[in-house]
Length: 503
View 1 (cartoon, rainbow, N blue to C red):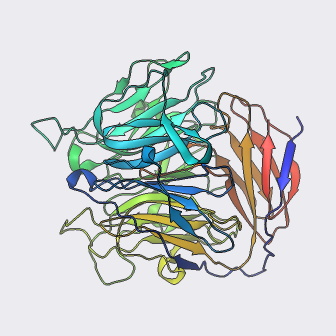
View 2: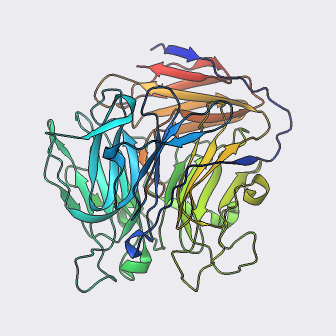
């Protein structure tokens, strides 16, 4: 099958033979603070998506006890945003948000997570939003802290999963009072009644992923041991007709941490995704075992240098608290790096109070080194959600961070030039953005793979073309494995462009 390609050339960046350290500049940002009582110690996410069709992503930021805000993108060469929030998006109690085109009409919709009833908002032209009607989605009053979505085979609507935290209505709480993960599966053109996935262990991040590349996305859940205390662990649900938990008999390795965020990306070049999990204390990198043919990931945290367990500047020797995590090639050298937003829950004395954010740059030998301070992104605010995304269309990943009780931050990537490629997919309804597809890229840097997913991170979602760093390579070969398994031919493309591939 041949590719149908629509190429729109962006500003080219010439490659250099020696790639320097990443560099970011602080951007003047409209005032926005995520705040509130203990129900907003967690959350604080941001959704990155284009809501007015100008190919520049807007930012929708959770506010907690403050109103949530939409920041419109007015960037040229320099990044610039202005606060311009429609009434439908000025909401109290928002913990996070994820962009998704639920109805496949070409306009991005929003799933808004709240302390209260969660919302599905239908996107319309010029960043206007209205509630979805007549699709059967009904949300009760929950403390929602995680979200993911996928399209199951043959369905018009996406399957939605909401991770809930402590049950605020349980008089015996908060400890051992965790709510369930809530699954909304479609039944024709409407949603069936909600299906609780129990036991729940206070989820702070969830992610649908086709981990085995067999055509079915299962649901990984990262849970906060602080509240489930004992008897819980990290989870993954096999999305069968009746979902079931994977166990050690399936090859799942039991694991209990103070789980906060999930990031997923193939960093070994075998086409299967590794997992990075944030926590209070060590951050965990787990390498997928392709030989096991089971849902088995093995710890490689210390081997790869990704623990990031204490502040790297500032002198506070107490353990770090990691929140949002994301893979991304910030210096376009063809090797994925890792960003971690960090910050004390509030005043926890056993954890670092001055806890700078982490940027782990992947080196040529596959290990990671801390570069946040040198790069200019080592903020010591109480960071929560975030996003690595190209905000001004120059092929470099910029950074957005939402902070608790202090102003949100935006950093423009000014790293020295190296080659890159952005790949955007589109297909007919349903699932117009081809969630569940895999994009594979071959270059002199080896094989890079991107699975298109919705979820993970910490309360923060991105709807943007997949980004690849190419280093000095001026060409690459690309192919797509669409949802359902149909694969395109490998096609040679030039670097430094946005590549749109239509099924």
